[in-house]
Length: 510
Image 1 (cartoon, rainbow, N blue to C red):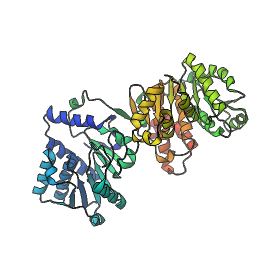
Image 2: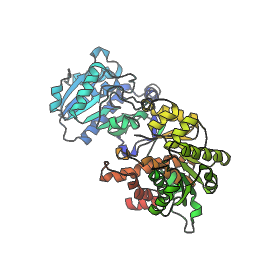
Image 3: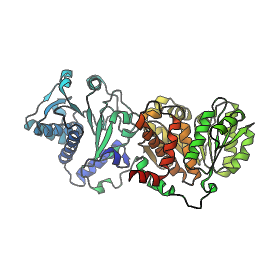
Image 4: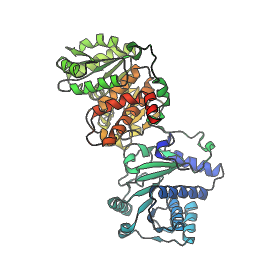
């Protein structure tokens, strides 16, 4: 049964683990490799018919591995359904083995032959099926394959990728030189973690899944690499954010202190503070440059704004706070560095939760502090500074980067970007919410405030981290209904309030 992207499994695997699942299904549970290939081909062809019901002419590009075998099955089924099918095999037939060779023979018996790749054939095609390269790819695509991929992308035909878009690294989500840009990807047996972060979402299009009727016992003992999360998965958080008691008061919902807003950057700290209030923190205070206090109070009078004459004024404010967030608009000069130093001096004695964002992370990268009760929220550039590497190295393997930051600095690392990662000490989660409209100033400040506001209301630090990421991303997805371009960080505020009131969301859905 094909599972659509809205209800995909939560378990994500590395490519080697999925190959092991495949081996166990065949060797320990008696499922023939050809039977699995037939199921995969049937599932892919069914999806193709559902997605493109008017399609009549297919180009199927096949490699020599099992992906190619799936393509041969699709070709046979499509021809039987009366479609015109062109099959391109990019390797010599002698390289085919096992189930792929059997699927090829069955295709030939059905009257189909392979042909050379010809760009002019694309002019009459309705859909391209990508069965070229599978999950075992670990080096850059080059030569004729690279040229073919580039030509296919240039023609902008809808592409259905089998298991993974050719050229995408299954474990890291990076493009290995060249990769097909699919409109849809159907993945089998186990979802590969690279589909959901880095360049993966941009290559995959809509993701579908079919377990090929593999028994549940096959999955026992195979390590899950990461967990896919989204707003729809927040059952635990929804219990925590149940409707409030009729006798509740503001003291029940914590006190957030947001520190930041050096010269000319009052907006960042104001965005973070208002976000904390919008998701339900009982009280929100702001510690900022004295000249900013009046304008922030005028814009949002519900915030308690304190003008700092010196970072030395912070300890008194921190005493009253439940949760502290620092970094939005903080700057990296003496004032910002002094503020972060004061915060860490106090927190090491109190163990209060802390969120560090923006310039707070840049200062942290220089100083190298470690704390086990904080959440760090770097974008790739800040992550690169935290690890002393390049941004390109971070993006080449975001999973490894998030894990390295968590190991070096402690606490929880939220590595922002397409497919935001939430790396705790023992698990990594990948958020499926969010969209390119979030690529604008202030979005990270709002996320910082959402995390702080949820922590203040009593969520465990790990639950607060991934709940905030999902709520923040889903709020942006809702706003994007009016278009991604031109979205502002403050546009999220009405949606944030709605999404942390699940009873209201449920009523709206009913």
